[in-house]
Length: 431
Image (tube, rainbow, N blue to C red; front, side):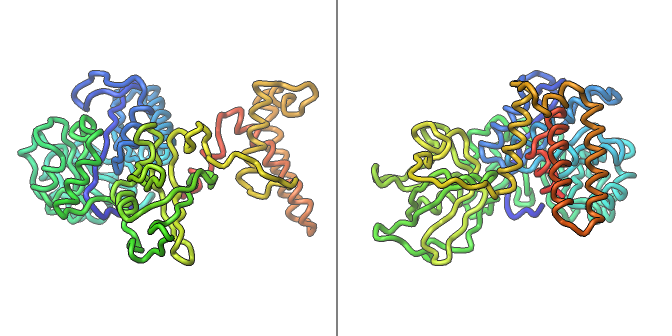
């Protein structure tokens, strides 16, 4: 996970499926950790740390925390690093399986130093963050830390405890006692690469302003770095470039808008889609009044450099009518079979799920639901075996048929276990 600028990192302190103020302050500040994490993600933080504060040895609460972390990872659009309750390699694996980009080893806890090499060699050093309070623990293990970790995070006693480490890794600090603004800390401590804790959480609405402050000072932040300058793009007769906007998850086309130079540069610096409104003759931050922001995932120029394709995370609806997409007025249509594999799988899965809520007499899917999990598992096993046998035969049609049968029964199992195709594709993408 390469870093190329100063990072603002949100923190979720998870205790009993709620968010508390900090590691040491157990005051509940949110009953909904997922909503809290989304709020941080949508405020333009660059990453989120989630701390599992469930009691050591309480496996039931730890498993619930992992389920909550999984929900958070699925809901937010920034990398998540999981921390807390790590005592063995299995704990790091569970965090990564929950969707975290990285897991954290706390070097203040016995045993974590000893498993550093093991977890790094198993999952890769890019998956391992090392937390500490006592600088000497790093010095004593400097060679191993640099070889097997990707970042170090200091938990200082106060802001005066900050000092540049001798470890050649990205360096972040967790600060819950707010004595300075985060942009001031970055500006006065150029060796800090990331800041997290309540200094970020309590000022989440100012993240864009902090980033602009650092940019104005010439300090590099995590921002989109364009391969093409505005001058490289070809403009229309109004001096603007049309932008086609697409949902990054589904590829659904959402809208068409236009950018001038200011809108283009604002989009790149803030990560929020900004356009030029021709009707109002002014800059237009999408979502400024509706809160239906569009967060940039990728920008592409076409072959002539005269049109931009923007892949975005759309909050709410893209269209002013309340429709998710502006393109809903059908002009003409021929009958055709859907060829997009993801859309086909999603469509079949939705029908399978719907049978749970709205049973149909004579439905084979409902028959499987009524027979229960053991029958479904038996069918999955049978279809897997038939697929293997078909694969040994020369006729491809047979294996296609058996694979389709297997996928159908697998989707019934997915529906029973509340596993979505997005859960599967997210996990595949992480691999």
